[in-house]
Image 1 (cartoon, rainbow, N blue to C red):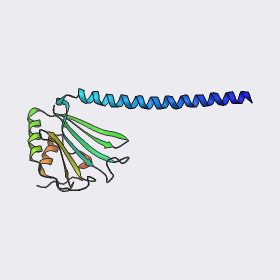
Image 2: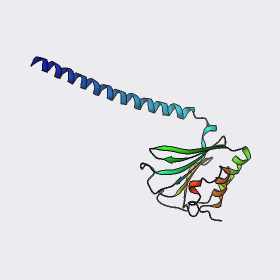
Image 3: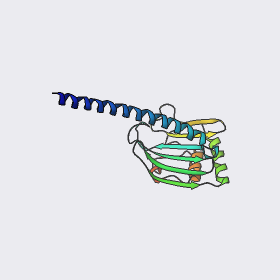
Image 4: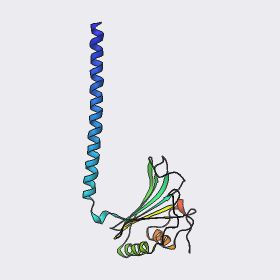
Length: 174
């Protein structure tokens, strides 16, 4: 009987120790993540910041819904363009990169400033989203995928073209 009680005590102490270690690990990870994020934010050079993001959903799922698929284009101050098929909570696939020269970058900035008001008011679900980060701060505009402004077509051309997944999906107003 005493041996069983000793074994039970050892098991309880082991479980308690494990719970404490798991709790401590979670706390340390959260603190590390927060500090890492703060450090990364401080380390980001203005030259490395996005000036443009275009998000084109390929399905009707919410942004944070598992396997929501979208095409994401990003353009940085340095002229580095990156686009990828993003499957939320799963994978990033078929990424492409392009380096814009100074005149192309200038043209994109001019086109951004000419973008008309959004054509899709209401829920973001299913709409093409354009986020710009220029001197006015972050501006988000939503457009219907079947009624896109011609300026956006020119921006896509400068960024390396419309990806094959979007060719039949996007319609531009001429």
